[in-house]
Picture (cartoon, rainbow, N blue to C red):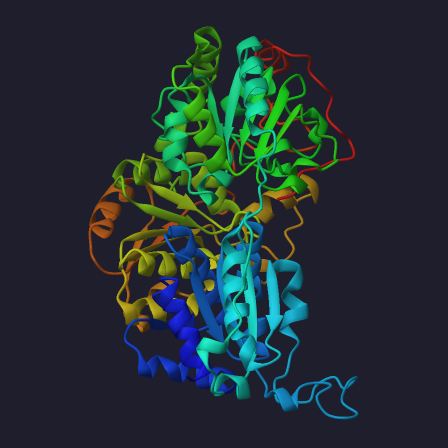
Length: 599
Protein backbone atom coordinates (compact mmCIF):
# COMPACT_ATOMS: atom_id res chain seq x y z
CA UNK A 1 0.00 0.00 0.00
CA UNK A 2 0.95 3.66 -0.26
CA UNK A 3 3.14 4.82 2.67
CA UNK A 4 0.99 7.89 3.33
CA UNK A 5 -2.14 5.73 3.48
CA UNK A 6 -0.32 3.46 5.93
CA UNK A 7 0.45 6.44 8.20
CA UNK A 8 -3.22 7.42 8.38
CA UNK A 9 -4.18 3.80 9.04
CA UNK A 10 -1.71 3.76 11.94
CA UNK A 11 -3.08 7.01 13.39
CA UNK A 12 -6.61 5.61 13.17
CA UNK A 13 -5.46 2.49 15.05
CA UNK A 14 -4.24 4.80 17.84
CA UNK A 15 -7.70 6.42 17.92
CA UNK A 16 -6.38 9.75 16.66
CA UNK A 17 -9.38 11.23 14.88
CA UNK A 18 -8.27 14.78 14.11
CA UNK A 19 -5.00 16.15 12.69
CA UNK A 20 -4.09 19.84 12.87
CA UNK A 21 -2.34 20.96 9.71
CA UNK A 22 -1.37 23.45 7.06
CA UNK A 23 -0.65 21.94 3.68
CA UNK A 24 2.45 22.61 1.60
CA UNK A 25 4.52 21.06 -1.16
CA UNK A 26 6.57 18.76 1.06
CA UNK A 27 3.53 17.35 2.90
CA UNK A 28 1.04 17.25 0.00
CA UNK A 29 1.24 13.51 -0.70
CA UNK A 30 0.50 12.72 2.94
CA UNK A 31 -2.37 15.21 3.13
CA UNK A 32 -3.79 13.73 -0.09
CA UNK A 33 -4.32 10.43 1.75
CA UNK A 34 -7.19 12.00 3.68
CA UNK A 35 -9.16 11.87 0.42
CA UNK A 36 -9.15 8.07 0.64
CA UNK A 37 -10.56 7.60 4.16
CA UNK A 38 -13.44 8.89 6.24
CA UNK A 39 -12.16 7.50 9.54
CA UNK A 40 -9.89 10.44 10.30
CA UNK A 41 -10.25 14.13 9.56
CA UNK A 42 -8.10 17.23 9.68
CA UNK A 43 -8.52 20.79 10.88
CA UNK A 44 -6.94 23.50 8.73
CA UNK A 45 -5.32 26.22 10.82
CA UNK A 46 -3.83 29.58 9.89
CA UNK A 47 -0.37 29.17 11.46
CA UNK A 48 1.71 26.09 12.31
CA UNK A 49 2.51 27.43 15.78
CA UNK A 50 -1.22 27.41 16.50
CA UNK A 51 -1.46 23.84 15.13
CA UNK A 52 1.07 22.60 17.70
CA UNK A 53 -0.76 24.44 20.49
CA UNK A 54 -4.13 23.04 19.40
CA UNK A 55 -2.60 19.56 19.41
CA UNK A 56 -1.15 20.16 22.88
CA UNK A 57 -4.55 21.07 24.31
CA UNK A 58 -6.24 18.24 22.40
CA UNK A 59 -3.93 15.77 24.16
CA UNK A 60 -4.51 17.40 27.56
CA UNK A 61 -8.24 16.91 27.18
CA UNK A 62 -7.66 13.25 26.24
CA UNK A 63 -8.20 10.41 26.19
CA UNK A 64 -5.86 10.07 23.19
CA UNK A 65 -2.76 11.83 21.96
CA UNK A 66 -2.85 14.27 19.05
CA UNK A 67 -1.08 14.88 15.76
CA UNK A 68 0.02 17.70 13.45
CA UNK A 69 1.19 17.64 9.84
CA UNK A 70 3.13 20.50 8.27
CA UNK A 71 5.45 21.13 5.37
CA UNK A 72 9.25 21.42 5.45
CA UNK A 73 11.36 24.45 6.36
CA UNK A 74 9.27 27.29 7.83
CA UNK A 75 6.27 24.99 8.24
CA UNK A 76 8.30 22.75 10.51
CA UNK A 77 10.16 25.50 12.38
CA UNK A 78 6.86 27.26 13.11
CA UNK A 79 5.87 24.27 15.26
CA UNK A 80 8.72 24.78 17.72
CA UNK A 81 7.06 27.01 20.33
CA UNK A 82 4.08 24.65 20.57
CA UNK A 83 6.35 21.60 20.75
CA UNK A 84 8.21 23.26 23.63
CA UNK A 85 4.89 23.76 25.46
CA UNK A 86 4.28 20.01 25.27
CA UNK A 87 7.88 19.16 26.22
CA UNK A 88 8.00 21.22 29.41
CA UNK A 89 4.50 20.19 30.53
CA UNK A 90 4.95 16.49 29.61
CA UNK A 91 2.18 16.32 27.00
CA UNK A 92 2.26 13.57 24.32
CA UNK A 93 1.88 14.62 20.67
CA UNK A 94 3.04 13.34 17.29
CA UNK A 95 4.34 15.97 14.87
CA UNK A 96 4.82 14.80 11.27
CA UNK A 97 6.83 17.11 9.05
CA UNK A 98 7.37 16.87 5.32
CA UNK A 99 10.91 17.02 3.95
CA UNK A 100 12.52 17.50 0.55
CA UNK A 101 13.03 14.41 -1.63
CA UNK A 102 15.67 12.06 -0.24
CA UNK A 103 17.87 12.62 -3.30
CA UNK A 104 17.71 16.42 -2.77
CA UNK A 105 18.90 16.33 0.84
CA UNK A 106 22.17 17.71 2.11
CA UNK A 107 24.81 15.01 1.60
CA UNK A 108 22.68 12.84 -0.71
CA UNK A 109 24.74 13.78 -3.76
CA UNK A 110 28.49 14.06 -4.10
CA UNK A 111 29.86 17.40 -2.92
CA UNK A 112 26.72 18.47 -0.97
CA UNK A 113 27.60 17.20 2.53
CA UNK A 114 28.64 20.62 3.83
CA UNK A 115 26.24 22.62 1.69
CA UNK A 116 23.93 24.78 3.76
CA UNK A 117 20.81 23.84 1.78
CA UNK A 118 20.14 21.74 -1.31
CA UNK A 119 16.39 21.17 -1.73
CA UNK A 120 13.88 24.01 -1.59
CA UNK A 121 12.99 24.77 2.04
CA UNK A 122 15.27 21.98 3.27
CA UNK A 123 15.78 22.37 7.05
CA UNK A 124 17.25 19.92 9.56
CA UNK A 125 14.19 19.92 11.83
CA UNK A 126 15.38 16.75 13.59
CA UNK A 127 18.49 18.42 15.04
CA UNK A 128 16.53 21.56 15.89
CA UNK A 129 13.84 19.71 17.86
CA UNK A 130 15.92 17.01 19.57
CA UNK A 131 16.36 19.02 22.81
CA UNK A 132 12.57 19.48 23.17
CA UNK A 133 11.26 16.09 22.10
CA UNK A 134 11.42 12.54 23.42
CA UNK A 135 12.18 11.30 19.92
CA UNK A 136 13.00 13.16 16.70
CA UNK A 137 13.82 11.20 13.57
CA UNK A 138 14.02 11.53 9.79
CA UNK A 139 12.92 8.45 7.88
CA UNK A 140 15.91 6.82 6.14
CA UNK A 141 13.88 4.50 3.91
CA UNK A 142 10.16 3.73 3.41
CA UNK A 143 10.35 0.29 5.04
CA UNK A 144 11.19 1.86 8.42
CA UNK A 145 7.77 3.43 8.70
CA UNK A 146 6.04 0.85 10.93
CA UNK A 147 8.97 0.62 13.35
CA UNK A 148 9.35 4.41 13.62
CA UNK A 149 5.62 5.09 14.03
CA UNK A 150 5.33 2.45 16.77
CA UNK A 151 8.46 3.68 18.52
CA UNK A 152 7.40 7.33 18.37
CA UNK A 153 3.90 6.57 19.64
CA UNK A 154 5.26 4.46 22.50
CA UNK A 155 7.87 7.00 23.58
CA UNK A 156 5.38 9.88 23.42
CA UNK A 157 3.22 8.17 26.06
CA UNK A 158 5.70 6.08 28.07
CA UNK A 159 7.11 7.22 31.41
CA UNK A 160 7.13 11.00 31.54
CA UNK A 161 5.22 11.79 28.32
CA UNK A 162 6.23 14.30 25.69
CA UNK A 163 6.16 15.26 21.99
CA UNK A 164 7.85 13.40 19.12
CA UNK A 165 8.78 14.48 15.58
CA UNK A 166 8.86 12.29 12.46
CA UNK A 167 10.36 13.90 9.35
CA UNK A 168 9.36 12.22 6.06
CA UNK A 169 10.93 13.01 2.65
CA UNK A 170 8.46 13.65 -0.17
CA UNK A 171 9.48 10.69 -2.33
CA UNK A 172 8.97 8.33 0.63
CA UNK A 173 5.44 9.64 1.16
CA UNK A 174 4.33 8.32 -2.25
CA UNK A 175 6.32 5.08 -2.06
CA UNK A 176 4.65 1.67 -2.14
CA UNK A 177 5.26 -0.63 0.85
CA UNK A 178 4.22 -4.13 1.89
CA UNK A 179 2.81 -3.86 5.45
CA UNK A 180 3.29 -7.60 6.05
CA UNK A 181 7.07 -7.29 5.60
CA UNK A 182 7.57 -4.26 7.83
CA UNK A 183 9.58 -4.58 11.05
CA UNK A 184 7.79 -3.88 14.33
CA UNK A 185 9.08 -1.98 17.37
CA UNK A 186 9.35 -4.19 20.44
CA UNK A 187 9.64 -2.71 23.88
CA UNK A 188 9.78 -3.60 27.53
CA UNK A 189 7.98 -1.25 29.83
CA UNK A 190 10.57 -0.09 32.37
CA UNK A 191 9.92 -0.53 36.07
CA UNK A 192 10.54 2.67 37.97
CA UNK A 193 8.96 1.93 41.33
CA UNK A 194 11.77 -0.01 42.94
CA UNK A 195 11.36 -0.12 46.72
CA UNK A 196 7.92 1.49 46.44
CA UNK A 197 6.38 -0.57 49.24
CA UNK A 198 9.31 0.11 51.58
CA UNK A 199 8.98 3.82 50.86
CA UNK A 200 5.24 3.73 51.57
CA UNK A 201 5.96 2.29 55.02
CA UNK A 202 8.50 5.06 55.63
CA UNK A 203 5.97 7.64 54.42
CA UNK A 204 3.31 6.48 56.88
CA UNK A 205 5.72 6.56 59.78
CA UNK A 206 6.78 10.10 58.89
CA UNK A 207 3.18 11.33 58.62
CA UNK A 208 2.24 9.76 61.96
CA UNK A 209 5.14 11.51 63.69
CA UNK A 210 4.51 14.90 62.08
CA UNK A 211 2.63 17.69 63.83
CA UNK A 212 2.14 20.06 60.90
CA UNK A 213 1.89 18.02 57.66
CA UNK A 214 0.82 19.52 54.31
CA UNK A 215 -0.03 17.76 51.04
CA UNK A 216 1.02 19.51 47.81
CA UNK A 217 -0.67 18.46 44.54
CA UNK A 218 1.14 18.95 41.22
CA UNK A 219 0.48 18.46 37.53
CA UNK A 220 2.07 15.01 37.45
CA UNK A 221 -1.18 13.64 38.88
CA UNK A 222 -3.04 14.75 35.75
CA UNK A 223 -0.28 13.56 33.41
CA UNK A 224 -0.51 10.08 34.95
CA UNK A 225 -4.33 10.22 34.62
CA UNK A 226 -4.65 9.57 38.35
CA UNK A 227 -7.35 12.06 39.34
CA UNK A 228 -9.79 9.38 40.53
CA UNK A 229 -7.06 7.54 42.44
CA UNK A 230 -6.07 10.84 44.06
CA UNK A 231 -9.64 11.32 45.29
CA UNK A 232 -9.55 7.98 47.12
CA UNK A 233 -6.10 8.78 48.49
CA UNK A 234 -7.20 12.15 49.90
CA UNK A 235 -10.12 10.56 51.75
CA UNK A 236 -7.54 9.12 54.14
CA UNK A 237 -6.25 12.56 55.12
CA UNK A 238 -7.95 15.41 56.92
CA UNK A 239 -4.91 17.62 56.43
CA UNK A 240 -4.15 20.96 54.71
CA UNK A 241 -3.97 20.66 50.92
CA UNK A 242 -2.19 23.14 48.65
CA UNK A 243 -1.66 23.05 44.89
CA UNK A 244 0.86 24.19 42.33
CA UNK A 245 -0.36 26.13 39.29
CA UNK A 246 -0.55 23.00 37.15
CA UNK A 247 -2.38 21.16 39.92
CA UNK A 248 -4.88 23.93 40.60
CA UNK A 249 -7.88 21.99 39.25
CA UNK A 250 -7.18 18.75 41.14
CA UNK A 251 -9.30 19.66 44.13
CA UNK A 252 -12.55 21.55 44.62
CA UNK A 253 -11.63 24.97 46.02
CA UNK A 254 -14.69 24.85 48.24
CA UNK A 255 -13.25 21.81 50.01
CA UNK A 256 -12.77 22.72 53.67
CA UNK A 257 -9.11 21.66 53.85
CA UNK A 258 -8.03 23.28 50.57
CA UNK A 259 -5.85 26.23 51.57
CA UNK A 260 -4.76 27.67 48.19
CA UNK A 261 -2.04 27.53 45.57
CA UNK A 262 1.53 28.03 46.63
CA UNK A 263 4.57 29.97 45.45
CA UNK A 264 5.74 33.31 44.10
CA UNK A 265 2.16 34.34 43.23
CA UNK A 266 0.47 32.03 45.71
CA UNK A 267 -1.90 32.88 48.52
CA UNK A 268 -0.52 34.04 51.85
CA UNK A 269 -2.42 31.21 53.54
CA UNK A 270 -0.96 28.44 51.37
CA UNK A 271 2.53 29.86 51.71
CA UNK A 272 2.22 30.17 55.50
CA UNK A 273 1.02 26.55 55.63
CA UNK A 274 3.95 25.21 53.62
CA UNK A 275 6.59 27.36 55.27
CA UNK A 276 5.41 26.45 58.79
CA UNK A 277 5.01 22.75 58.04
CA UNK A 278 7.18 20.01 59.48
CA UNK A 279 6.34 17.56 56.69
CA UNK A 280 5.51 18.31 53.05
CA UNK A 281 4.27 15.52 50.79
CA UNK A 282 4.76 16.62 47.17
CA UNK A 283 2.85 14.60 44.58
CA UNK A 284 3.87 15.14 40.95
CA UNK A 285 5.58 18.53 41.29
CA UNK A 286 9.08 19.38 40.11
CA UNK A 287 9.26 22.13 42.74
CA UNK A 288 10.55 24.82 40.39
CA UNK A 289 11.48 28.31 41.56
CA UNK A 290 7.95 29.63 40.92
CA UNK A 291 6.99 27.40 43.85
CA UNK A 292 10.08 27.58 46.05
CA UNK A 293 11.00 31.21 45.40
CA UNK A 294 14.41 32.31 44.16
CA UNK A 295 16.23 30.81 47.15
CA UNK A 296 15.15 27.14 47.29
CA UNK A 297 16.92 26.43 50.58
CA UNK A 298 14.37 28.68 52.34
CA UNK A 299 11.44 26.60 51.02
CA UNK A 300 9.72 24.41 53.65
CA UNK A 301 13.01 24.74 55.50
CA UNK A 302 11.88 23.01 58.71
CA UNK A 303 9.94 20.28 56.93
CA UNK A 304 10.81 16.78 55.87
CA UNK A 305 10.10 17.13 52.14
CA UNK A 306 8.88 13.92 50.49
CA UNK A 307 8.64 13.97 46.69
CA UNK A 308 6.89 11.41 44.48
CA UNK A 309 7.96 11.85 40.85
CA UNK A 310 8.22 9.63 37.77
CA UNK A 311 11.37 11.43 36.61
CA UNK A 312 14.45 10.49 38.65
CA UNK A 313 16.25 13.55 37.27
CA UNK A 314 13.73 15.80 39.00
CA UNK A 315 14.49 14.01 42.27
CA UNK A 316 18.26 14.42 41.98
CA UNK A 317 18.48 18.17 41.34
CA UNK A 318 21.12 19.88 43.49
CA UNK A 319 20.08 23.52 43.87
CA UNK A 320 19.61 24.14 47.57
CA UNK A 321 16.36 22.24 48.08
CA UNK A 322 16.86 19.08 50.13
CA UNK A 323 14.49 16.14 49.76
CA UNK A 324 14.16 13.92 52.83
CA UNK A 325 12.53 11.01 50.97
CA UNK A 326 12.60 10.46 47.20
CA UNK A 327 9.99 8.13 45.73
CA UNK A 328 10.63 7.45 42.04
CA UNK A 329 7.26 6.21 40.84
CA UNK A 330 4.45 6.81 38.42
CA UNK A 331 1.71 8.54 40.45
CA UNK A 332 -0.82 5.97 39.25
CA UNK A 333 1.28 3.11 40.68
CA UNK A 334 1.86 5.09 43.87
CA UNK A 335 -1.86 5.62 44.48
CA UNK A 336 -2.83 2.05 43.53
CA UNK A 337 -0.31 0.58 45.98
CA UNK A 338 -1.08 3.03 48.76
CA UNK A 339 -4.84 2.73 48.48
CA UNK A 340 -4.67 -1.07 48.33
CA UNK A 341 -2.35 -1.54 51.32
CA UNK A 342 -3.77 1.16 53.59
CA UNK A 343 -7.52 0.90 53.17
CA UNK A 344 -8.46 1.76 56.77
CA UNK A 345 -5.84 4.39 57.55
CA UNK A 346 -7.00 7.87 58.57
CA UNK A 347 -4.66 10.77 59.27
CA UNK A 348 -5.96 13.93 60.91
CA UNK A 349 -4.61 16.92 62.79
CA UNK A 350 -7.49 19.26 63.57
CA UNK A 351 -5.52 21.93 65.46
CA UNK A 352 -3.05 22.35 62.63
CA UNK A 353 -5.82 22.31 60.03
CA UNK A 354 -7.74 25.00 61.96
CA UNK A 355 -4.63 27.18 61.91
CA UNK A 356 -4.33 26.89 58.13
CA UNK A 357 -8.05 27.54 57.63
CA UNK A 358 -7.68 30.61 59.85
CA UNK A 359 -4.95 31.94 57.55
CA UNK A 360 -7.19 31.32 54.54
CA UNK A 361 -9.99 33.30 56.17
CA UNK A 362 -7.75 36.14 57.35
CA UNK A 363 -5.88 36.65 54.07
CA UNK A 364 -8.37 36.29 51.18
CA UNK A 365 -7.19 37.01 47.65
CA UNK A 366 -10.38 38.90 46.76
CA UNK A 367 -11.03 41.82 49.10
CA UNK A 368 -14.29 43.69 49.64
CA UNK A 369 -12.75 46.99 48.55
CA UNK A 370 -12.25 45.62 45.03
CA UNK A 371 -16.00 45.65 44.42
CA UNK A 372 -16.23 49.36 45.29
CA UNK A 373 -13.96 50.45 42.43
CA UNK A 374 -15.83 52.88 40.14
CA UNK A 375 -13.47 53.47 37.21
CA UNK A 376 -12.45 50.50 35.08
CA UNK A 377 -13.21 46.88 35.95
CA UNK A 378 -11.41 45.43 38.95
CA UNK A 379 -9.80 42.25 37.69
CA UNK A 380 -10.26 40.38 40.98
CA UNK A 381 -13.95 41.31 41.06
CA UNK A 382 -14.24 40.07 37.47
CA UNK A 383 -12.83 36.63 38.30
CA UNK A 384 -15.07 36.44 41.37
CA UNK A 385 -18.15 36.78 39.15
CA UNK A 386 -16.73 34.45 36.50
CA UNK A 387 -16.16 31.77 39.17
CA UNK A 388 -19.77 32.00 40.31
CA UNK A 389 -21.19 31.73 36.79
CA UNK A 390 -19.03 28.94 35.34
CA UNK A 391 -20.61 25.49 35.25
CA UNK A 392 -19.05 22.45 36.86
CA UNK A 393 -17.89 20.93 33.57
CA UNK A 394 -16.23 24.11 32.28
CA UNK A 395 -12.79 24.13 30.68
CA UNK A 396 -10.72 27.26 31.36
CA UNK A 397 -7.47 27.91 29.49
CA UNK A 398 -5.36 30.94 30.40
CA UNK A 399 -2.47 32.43 28.47
CA UNK A 400 0.51 34.02 30.25
CA UNK A 401 1.59 36.99 32.32
CA UNK A 402 -0.76 39.07 34.40
CA UNK A 403 -4.08 37.64 33.24
CA UNK A 404 -2.87 34.08 33.88
CA UNK A 405 -1.74 35.06 37.37
CA UNK A 406 -4.96 36.91 38.26
CA UNK A 407 -7.00 33.94 37.05
CA UNK A 408 -4.96 31.47 39.09
CA UNK A 409 -5.17 33.64 42.18
CA UNK A 410 -8.85 34.51 42.02
CA UNK A 411 -10.80 31.75 40.26
CA UNK A 412 -12.44 29.28 42.62
CA UNK A 413 -12.26 26.03 40.70
CA UNK A 414 -15.17 23.62 41.17
CA UNK A 415 -14.98 19.84 41.03
CA UNK A 416 -15.20 18.72 37.41
CA UNK A 417 -13.71 21.88 35.93
CA UNK A 418 -10.44 21.82 33.98
CA UNK A 419 -8.01 24.73 34.20
CA UNK A 420 -4.68 24.73 32.42
CA UNK A 421 -2.09 26.74 30.55
CA UNK A 422 1.31 26.01 29.02
CA UNK A 423 2.84 26.48 32.45
CA UNK A 424 6.44 25.48 31.76
CA UNK A 425 7.02 27.36 28.50
CA UNK A 426 4.34 30.02 29.06
CA UNK A 427 4.43 31.72 25.65
CA UNK A 428 2.24 34.61 24.62
CA UNK A 429 -0.39 33.32 22.22
CA UNK A 430 -1.03 29.84 23.67
CA UNK A 431 -4.51 30.08 25.18
CA UNK A 432 -6.51 30.98 22.07
CA UNK A 433 -5.38 28.15 19.75
CA UNK A 434 -5.33 25.78 22.75
CA UNK A 435 -8.98 26.66 23.38
CA UNK A 436 -9.82 25.68 19.80
CA UNK A 437 -7.99 22.36 20.21
CA UNK A 438 -9.73 21.68 23.54
CA UNK A 439 -13.16 22.46 22.11
CA UNK A 440 -12.60 20.09 19.16
CA UNK A 441 -11.34 17.37 21.50
CA UNK A 442 -14.62 17.59 23.42
CA UNK A 443 -16.90 17.57 20.37
CA UNK A 444 -17.21 21.36 20.05
CA UNK A 445 -17.73 22.01 23.75
CA UNK A 446 -17.69 25.46 25.38
CA UNK A 447 -14.23 26.63 26.42
CA UNK A 448 -13.29 29.76 28.36
CA UNK A 449 -10.16 31.40 26.95
CA UNK A 450 -8.48 33.89 29.33
CA UNK A 451 -6.18 36.13 27.30
CA UNK A 452 -4.55 39.55 27.37
CA UNK A 453 -4.53 42.47 24.96
CA UNK A 454 -0.91 41.69 24.06
CA UNK A 455 -1.09 37.91 23.99
CA UNK A 456 -4.22 37.61 21.86
CA UNK A 457 -2.42 39.32 18.98
CA UNK A 458 0.21 36.58 18.69
CA UNK A 459 -2.27 34.10 17.17
CA UNK A 460 -5.23 36.33 16.40
CA UNK A 461 -5.34 34.88 12.87
CA UNK A 462 -6.99 31.77 14.35
CA UNK A 463 -10.20 33.79 14.62
CA UNK A 464 -10.82 32.41 11.14
CA UNK A 465 -10.30 28.82 12.35
CA UNK A 466 -12.68 29.52 15.22
CA UNK A 467 -15.31 30.99 12.93
CA UNK A 468 -15.05 28.38 10.18
CA UNK A 469 -15.53 25.60 12.74
CA UNK A 470 -18.20 27.58 14.64
CA UNK A 471 -16.83 26.65 18.05
CA UNK A 472 -18.44 28.08 21.24
CA UNK A 473 -15.14 29.43 22.60
CA UNK A 474 -15.52 32.48 24.84
CA UNK A 475 -12.47 34.70 24.34
CA UNK A 476 -12.01 36.93 27.40
CA UNK A 477 -9.35 39.57 26.79
CA UNK A 478 -8.15 41.34 29.94
CA UNK A 479 -7.07 44.72 28.54
CA UNK A 480 -4.68 46.85 30.60
CA UNK A 481 -3.27 48.56 27.49
CA UNK A 482 0.20 47.06 27.68
CA UNK A 483 2.18 44.25 29.24
CA UNK A 484 0.94 44.30 32.83
CA UNK A 485 3.28 41.82 34.49
CA UNK A 486 6.27 43.46 32.81
CA UNK A 487 5.09 46.92 33.92
CA UNK A 488 4.94 45.69 37.51
CA UNK A 489 8.47 44.28 37.17
CA UNK A 490 9.72 47.56 35.70
CA UNK A 491 8.09 49.53 38.52
CA UNK A 492 9.76 47.33 41.14
CA UNK A 493 13.25 46.97 39.72
CA UNK A 494 13.74 49.46 36.87
CA UNK A 495 12.60 52.72 38.44
CA UNK A 496 9.38 52.80 36.36
CA UNK A 497 11.18 52.92 33.02
CA UNK A 498 8.42 51.31 30.97
CA UNK A 499 10.45 50.47 27.90
CA UNK A 500 8.57 48.40 25.28
CA UNK A 501 5.59 47.76 27.57
CA UNK A 502 3.20 50.75 27.18
CA UNK A 503 1.64 52.70 24.27
CA UNK A 504 4.08 55.60 24.62
CA UNK A 505 6.90 53.11 24.15
CA UNK A 506 5.58 51.28 21.11
CA UNK A 507 3.11 48.70 22.48
CA UNK A 508 -0.29 49.52 21.00
CA UNK A 509 -3.59 47.73 20.48
CA UNK A 510 -5.88 47.54 17.46
CA UNK A 511 -9.61 48.17 17.65
CA UNK A 512 -10.71 44.71 18.76
CA UNK A 513 -14.33 45.48 17.96
CA UNK A 514 -13.48 46.09 14.31
CA UNK A 515 -11.29 42.99 14.14
CA UNK A 516 -13.96 40.69 15.56
CA UNK A 517 -16.51 42.19 13.18
CA UNK A 518 -14.20 41.36 10.25
CA UNK A 519 -14.13 37.72 11.36
CA UNK A 520 -17.87 37.65 12.03
CA UNK A 521 -17.53 37.07 15.76
CA UNK A 522 -19.76 38.77 18.32
CA UNK A 523 -18.03 41.52 20.35
CA UNK A 524 -18.80 42.52 23.96
CA UNK A 525 -17.14 44.91 26.38
CA UNK A 526 -17.01 45.21 30.18
CA UNK A 527 -15.97 48.71 31.20
CA UNK A 528 -16.76 48.63 34.93
CA UNK A 529 -17.73 46.34 37.77
CA UNK A 530 -21.45 46.85 37.28
CA UNK A 531 -21.17 45.44 33.72
CA UNK A 532 -19.58 42.13 34.73
CA UNK A 533 -22.51 39.89 35.66
CA UNK A 534 -24.78 41.18 32.91
CA UNK A 535 -22.30 40.63 30.07
CA UNK A 536 -21.09 37.26 31.36
CA UNK A 537 -24.60 35.88 31.78
CA UNK A 538 -25.41 36.88 28.20
CA UNK A 539 -22.23 35.53 26.57
CA UNK A 540 -21.48 32.36 28.54
CA UNK A 541 -24.82 30.80 27.67
CA UNK A 542 -24.64 31.12 23.87
CA UNK A 543 -23.55 28.27 21.58
CA UNK A 544 -21.36 30.43 19.39
CA UNK A 545 -17.98 32.17 19.71
CA UNK A 546 -17.93 35.35 21.79
CA UNK A 547 -15.23 37.99 22.24
CA UNK A 548 -15.37 39.79 25.61
CA UNK A 549 -13.01 42.72 26.21
CA UNK A 550 -12.53 43.53 29.91
CA UNK A 551 -11.12 47.01 30.48
CA UNK A 552 -8.99 47.15 33.64
CA UNK A 553 -6.68 49.81 35.10
CA UNK A 554 -3.44 50.17 33.12
CA UNK A 555 -1.52 49.97 36.40
CA UNK A 556 -3.50 47.06 37.91
CA UNK A 557 -1.14 45.12 40.20
CA UNK A 558 -0.81 41.44 41.01
CA UNK A 559 -1.54 41.17 44.74
CA UNK A 560 0.11 39.47 46.56
CA UNK A 561 3.45 38.83 44.87
CA UNK A 562 6.90 37.72 46.03
CA UNK A 563 9.68 40.22 45.41
CA UNK A 564 13.15 41.32 46.44
CA UNK A 565 14.46 37.79 47.16
CA UNK A 566 12.18 37.16 50.15
CA UNK A 567 11.19 33.62 51.18
CA UNK A 568 7.70 32.76 49.93
CA UNK A 569 5.98 33.34 53.26
CA UNK A 570 6.86 37.05 53.06
CA UNK A 571 4.77 38.27 50.13
CA UNK A 572 4.32 41.90 49.10
CA UNK A 573 2.69 44.15 50.04
CA UNK A 574 4.57 43.24 53.21
CA UNK A 575 2.67 42.66 56.42
CA UNK A 576 3.80 44.64 59.46
CA UNK A 577 6.77 42.88 61.03
CA UNK A 578 4.71 42.27 64.16
CA UNK A 579 1.85 40.65 62.25
CA UNK A 580 4.26 38.67 60.11
CA UNK A 581 6.08 37.30 63.16
CA UNK A 582 2.77 36.25 64.74
CA UNK A 583 2.11 34.00 61.74
CA UNK A 584 5.48 32.25 61.84
CA UNK A 585 5.87 29.05 63.82
CA UNK A 586 9.39 28.48 62.52
CA UNK A 587 12.45 30.73 62.64
CA UNK A 588 12.35 33.56 60.11
CA UNK A 589 15.15 34.19 57.60
CA UNK A 590 16.47 37.34 55.99
CA UNK A 591 15.85 38.04 52.34
CA UNK A 592 18.55 37.40 49.80
CA UNK A 593 20.06 40.62 48.44
CA UNK A 594 21.40 38.76 45.40
CA UNK A 595 18.02 37.49 44.18
CA UNK A 596 15.02 39.25 42.74
CA UNK A 597 11.98 37.50 41.39
CA UNK A 598 11.36 37.27 37.66
CA UNK A 599 8.11 38.62 36.23
